[in-house]
Length: 259
Image (cartoon, rainbow, N blue to C red; front, side, top):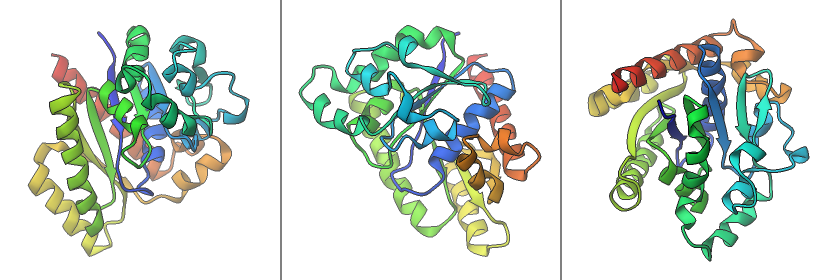
């Protein structure tokens, strides 16, 4: 079966997007899936959070987008996480400008992944928080978008923008693209507003809201400074266990889709 490619995206920053991407990758690896994490954010946080030093990478996703390197040549192994990483560093910021003049500029990543997709069950793309040429490359490559979001009032406003973007890309550039699901992150059930927003999400989006909820968890926040996914850093923590549950839910959903 060909791999399933998902963007982890949210146009609002600071919603735990990279944390979600890294920990879902590690969670999927733990339940026996072959995973490639693609870091499309010039900050390279998903790369570093996977235990890969972005400063020493010989090739990155930047080289893949400019077609001077293949996925097979540029990927590295996140040993502790158990998955492969197509890393990013500051160089990637220049790709925005360089891609503008190139042909098939939106499809560079899609074409590169096509060659490698038989080797993976899941490809997860960590997108920058803005709608940029990089994000567009991610969206044009993917089967779907997973949206990590906090249950706060402003998060709902940002979600409307993102859903519209997904619809536009679906209509004009990638007929496969759809909203796969909303992942509630940094959730604190003691805060009444969060519970209310969570209920609103379920009422409006139905089964597009994942059953798994990721609680607010200090251990998940600490893990990147050790260069580890939270799932590996402290497997017993509530946050880590929630991400492994989420990985199982993803595998089950995709299994049902393929059946």
